[in-house]
Picture 1: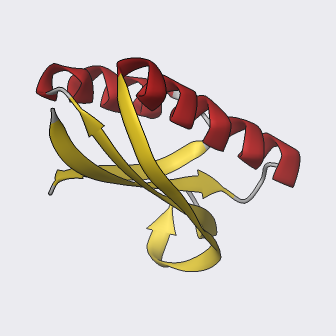
Picture 2: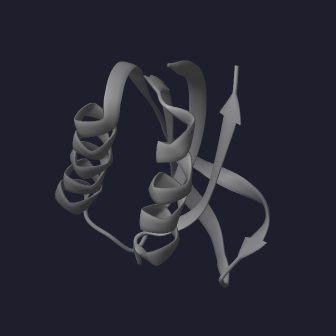
Length: 92
């Protein structure tokens, strides 16, 4: 298994409960295919540039271990989730 970090930016249009639900859904997806090391909530931050006409987003940093073939599916799930503005996964 490889070590990865993923930054996920959620839209600010959702409630805190929905943000927590999305955070847990992403953690569960990682847990079912690997191991979550940590999840850091960076809170609401101003974006460097406008994304989908939004200027702020809720940031989460996931540190996890998973097999390389899981990353494609993980990114696919993040792309189709309407609450996710942007995401980036890197191998450590």
